[in-house]
Length: 127
Ligand SMILES: [Zn+2]
Image (tube, rainbow, N blue to C red; front, side, top):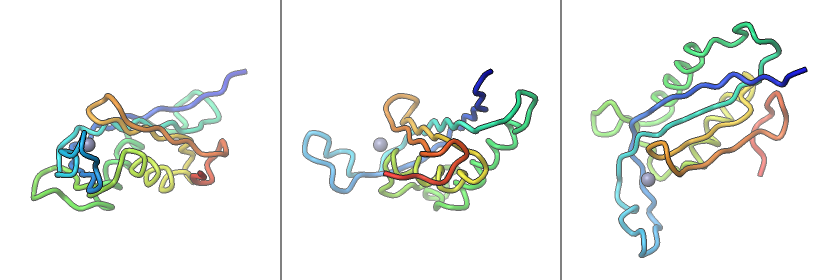
């Protein structure tokens, strides 16, 4: 018996900032660019394409471009003051009902955050 998850991965160009950034990293208070690497896990019941990867990746891209503003006319998202944690929370809350069980958001594929639902089939995020 296995527990299977389908994994999606989106690379989204975006900008964000941290208005309250402390002095060692004060530069983060200004809008700055990242490639946000967004990996998500989706619960599936069997291993024969129950959830199609391209379709679900497209759902995430379309959602993010509708949920957030475009950054200064570029093909990039303005995440405002959202942190990696808050971006992951937003995505997870949007897609938990479709079986998303975790969301990971990494800045340029490096540091970031990972959130997971408290229930296997997704009931939203709880802290
Ligand atoms: Zn940043």
